[in-house]
Amino acid sequence: MIVLKTLRRDYSLYQKTLFCQQRRWKKPVNSAQTRLEIRRTRDSKLDKLADNLRTLETILGVHKLMSTRKRGPFVSVQLMSRWRNILGLNINVGKFLHKYPHVFNVFTHPLNRNICCRLTPKFESLLSLEESVTRECELDCVCRIKKLLMMSKNGTLHVYALRLIRRELGLPDDFRDSILGKYGSDFRLVDLEVVELVSREENESLGDATIETWREKEYREKWLSEFETKFAFPVNFPTGFRIERGFREKLKNWQRLPYIKPYERKKENAVRVRTCGGVERFEKRVVAIIHELLSLMVEKMVEVERLAHFRKDLGMEVNVRELLLKHPGIFYISTKGSTQTVFLRDAYSKGCLIEPNPIYSVRREMLNLVLLGRRSTKQLQQHDGIKEQSGNLVGNEDNRGTRDGDWDTPILESFEDGNLYDNFEEVCDSSEEEFDDCGLSLNRSTESETCIQGLIKSTT
View 1 (cartoon, rainbow, N blue to C red):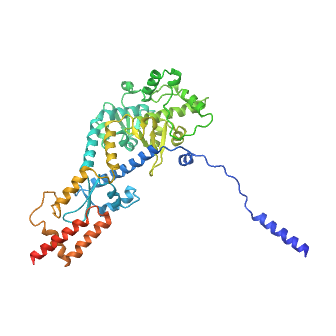
View 2: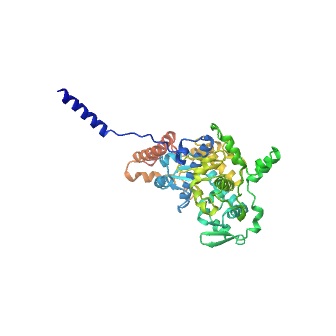
View 3: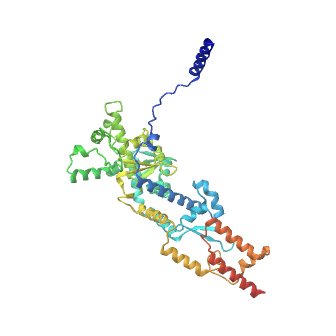
């Protein structure tokens, strides 16, 4: 018996050791994605700005879809509910419109009696102002495109890449005809989708990077040596950034490292990657190109994915996201929203641009109008007062005022089903459920009921 028990015990131990799984320690992944999500210091002000700009971009997308409608400057909310997936909204369209009364004006159509939406006059005036300012800054747009072409390897760029960053560069929608076609002495279309700079020698005066002004200022005001400022970059770390041992020394050596500047095109200065320090100098040149590219933007920011379309033309054949994460004091990547946006840190202070331009000022006014939310202003109070004074008056669709019989039209239409009060309650209930009393109120409904009862008694 003792022998059988020992055999059974040994057999059970053999089964456990046979089918047990060996757990191995895995080294944590250290990639650009993990550092982007976990191992980096966030900037709350730039993240908040990116989130607000994403909301403004959604509103501009609504305006773009509304402008495609040819029936008028308004769209029914029932139709707008189909645009939810196109706009990438995670809430109901009615709630989104209700959140921004300074941008959207929700009203009841006078004839069809359905709930419609249109932009407020203030926001429409800002849109037209942005378009006019963009036309006035045409020469600045030409200068930006010239600088981009001078930074490219062969003096050429793809038109579709410029179209992707059209809004960031402040270009008009028809920039291919209004700028590239108009200034034929400066630009030449080699192919249908490739633009080339006609003469590089005539535009050598534009070959000074924006960072050179900062270096000259540091050299004169802070009495620094030329060795310290000739190849240096402005570095501003976010609050809470941890400096490890040896980081300051590495940063100091990197600031002194020479590199070929973005507008230089000399064969004897070509970077040899396989030489000593060649990789570092090549990466520093790419940092200078991205810094100059962001400096040419209107808002000093762009989506990271759109930078990939300039990798071959500008000679940035590296992992752009990995390079941006290596320099958190120069660039900042915000992950707010569905895309990743890179900001130029030395161009911002407390979430605002240090040196604003006319196009940025107009867009900032749009953003301020969005950030008002549901806070009441004098303009909205006056608008609500006019609506209360109008009462139950129903005007024409072309806004020409009221005519004889406009009072009776909605009343007679409600008699089609034979019950006046049921139809009236259905209209009120549907509008209240969809927009949380944004267009109607209980006081107005009681006043309209008493008015209808008086009209029925007079007719009988």
